[in-house]
Length: 96
Image (cartoon, rainbow, N blue to C red; front, side):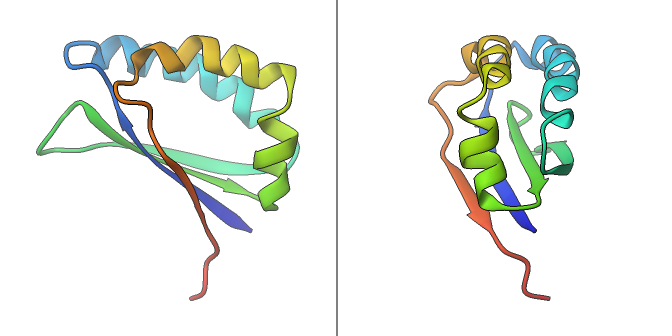
């Protein structure tokens, strides 16, 4: 299992709209092969920052299976307009 880690900088003032659209986008990602679950958390100190953690069976399930799919284009169309600047995506492997 790997964990995708992303800090999402949502344009201030668009947080509620982002959360509503994220609920729609969640349906897309949750149907992808290798998807094991996700959490979306909102930072208390800077409420326009969100932490997205997605569990995938393998790195390729995310980087190839999801990112190169038609479904990713739908995900992107829903969520990417909210980010400024565009977030950096990193991957972690649990060790404990």
